[in-house]
Length: 293
Ligand code: UTP
Image (cartoon, rainbow, N blue to C red; front, side):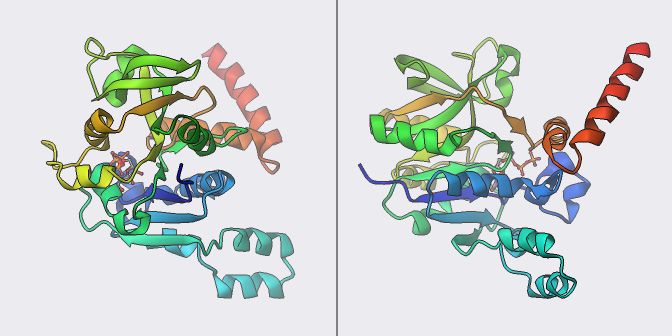
C-alpha cells in the first residue's frame, strides 16, 4: 500500500455566494474570528501527516500565497516594538511545504483537481476543500487515510444529511456496510432530488483518491454549466476502482456559504480566549431579547 504524502487544496473558485466580499478578495481568506478558512484546512493536512501540499489558485488569489509566505517588513516592525506574541502569530503561517498551481478558468472542482496531476504523479493523494471546516480530535483527513490503508480503496468523507437537502450534495448509494462507519459504494449521485436520493449520506469536502482519477477527469465532458464535476468522475472511477464512504459525525462548519460562516464565527468566537467571555454575555442577552420579541 503506497503511503499518502501529498494533499491538494482546490481554492480557485469564484466564491460568488459571498459577493460583494469576494469581488476583490479570495473567499478562502475570509476569517473565522482571526484565522483564514484555508488555514484550518492546511493545518488539518499537516496534522494528518501530509508532507507536501498543493493549493490550486487562480486570478485574484495572491493573498493566499502571501499568507503562507514570510512577511519580512511586518516581522521587523513587530520585532522592533517587542511584540513577541504577535510576531510568533505572524510567523506561524509561514509554511514552505506549500506549492501552487493556477487553474486558468474556473471550470469546476474536477478541472481544478486535474491541475494537480504533475504534482501528484502516480500516488494516491488527499483532497481537502476549504469550504468545510471539520474540527475533530483525530483529523478527518487522517481518518480517511487510515480507512484507505485498511481497505486499500479510495475514500470519501460523508455526513448524515436531512433528505430534503440532498440536492445540495453528492449522495452515496451504499452497497454494503464494511464497518459501522465505513460503507462500500455502489453509486455516487450528484445533487439528486430528495425523491431520487439513494441514501442520506452526503459527501463533504475530504477525499483520498487514487491517481487513476486524472485520466477520468481529462476525458470528462463539462456539464451544462461548463463545470467538470468531481462526483461524476468518482462515479466512473468507482466502477473500476471501488471506493468507500467514511461516515463523519463530528462538528462541521460549511464556510462556503453565509450562514455556515456566521455559525463558525459565533462558535469559534465562544472558544477564543480573547472573545469567549464577551461573546457568551452578548449571546445570553440576545437570547433574552429574542424571547421577548
Ligand atoms: P464551490 O462551488 O463551493 O466554490 O467549490 P465556488 O465556486 O468558489 O463557490 P460559489 O458557489 O461561487 O460561491 C468547492 C471548492 O472547489 C474550488 C473552490 O475554491 C472550493 O474550494 N473550486 C471550484 C476550484 O478550485 N475551481 C473551480 O472551478 C470551482
